[in-house]
Image 1 (cartoon, rainbow, N blue to C red):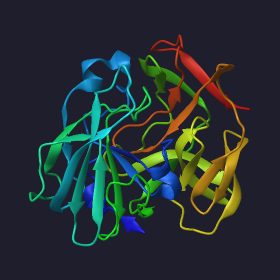
Image 2 (tube, rainbow, N blue to C red; image 1 turned 90 degrees about the vertical axis):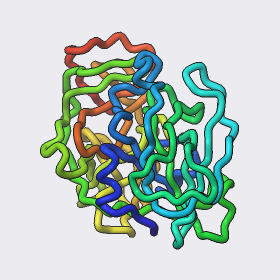
Image 3 (cartoon, rainbow, N blue to C red; image 1 turned 120 degrees about the vertical axis):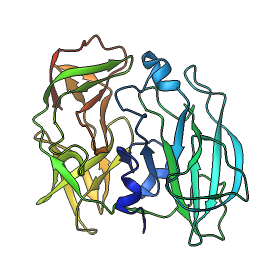
Image 4 (cartoon, rainbow, N blue to C red; image 1 turned 180 degrees about the horizontal axis):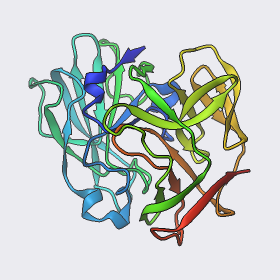
Length: 293
């Protein structure tokens, strides 16, 4: 596995390995990194300039830029016309990054934290997804352009599982989502945390889109050979094979009404369950109880 050090991850208040519908993330082979201004509370069309603002993308790797190119992305009304690929040779691997309009060019050298360019709102994003840097590593002699083929990513930081009973008050809304005030982060800025679930006899942190993406991940565990049912809010939501979780046919409800799902991730500075619910009529201050059927 390839990993990012805790020092590198400290540049990003939030990350996810599995919260994506694309095959590049299968088996945790890519990571999405959300820089500070990519706040998860401002991630769809209602967010306006906050969601589309050009924001500097700090590089998660050091090395020589070997390729940049414009790539075709799905056309969405809230997205830019094109996406971009930046490839950096780290000396050990090729680092393949997307969703940044490059201010660098082949031959440039970048250090960790240097700006790669401006993050863009890509047509690859669902409307509830915030701007971020997609990163995958692959062998230096491999094709850097092909979407699949990256190596599994190691989670090299402590991630604290947060117990959650499914309840909370709305603290932020967008056209397609709401954010709750719970579970709260126990130590903002000190370590990463995510929503806890149970896999067999182990407490894990769930990552992914439940159940609107095909599967998710079980992070923060010390095992790699588990095969067990995964439970959240008292219901079996899937089955873990290693750290990859295949979702069951479940339905997420908010105050008894079916919604699209839960957006599950790992965060360092703030937390609160994010409910994906296009067309909702919730308002800030509303109490919500989430259940799974």
